[in-house]
Length: 222
Image (cartoon, rainbow, N blue to C red; front, side):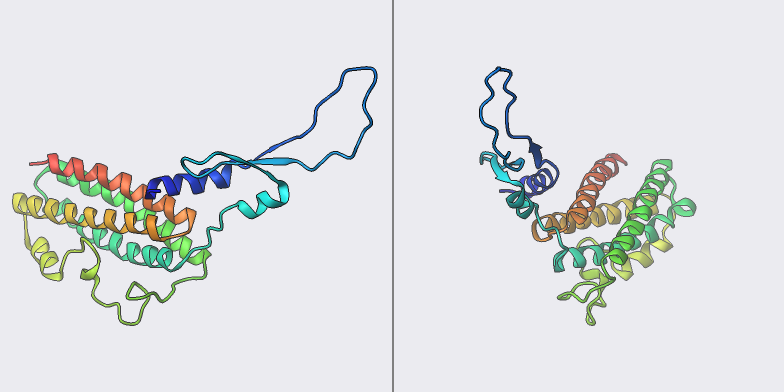
């Protein structure tokens, strides 16, 4: 099962456990002896390529996927907050340095999307007990080099971007931001495979969709 089939099945399984009433009405005059009706049955969707199953209500409750966040979920959210933060730092430079109106609009679009995403991820962390120490990820005592995250610009590159003006700024901004977006997509794809929380999966899918679209737009710019 690939990453996207896995996400789709988990979501469908959680949302489509449909209760069916078992029994039938008899319109005849000679009604059969009535017996206590069994409990409701539940149709549980199968994994991709597998048939659905009919379960008792008790067994169905056990089938609902446990989406408790794991270490990969926490690492992704904590690192992506930092990753998005650098993107916002770069977009703040565009209004007074960029020459191209398209670049300015793209910077504004990125800021408008990633600012609320940061707020959503911070809210997720708060709702799940705050930051966690992860193996080499954000929150660990030895995680200091943000450049180790995929697509992150180095401090030297950021210094160069701050110093650039006009067409030179436009070119460097598009280069760095495109790489930054590819890095975010790499991180999001990874958590879809390794994470367990449905809300994190939804946020990661949004990152992939949004930033893939923005990469296409940036690659069309001169």
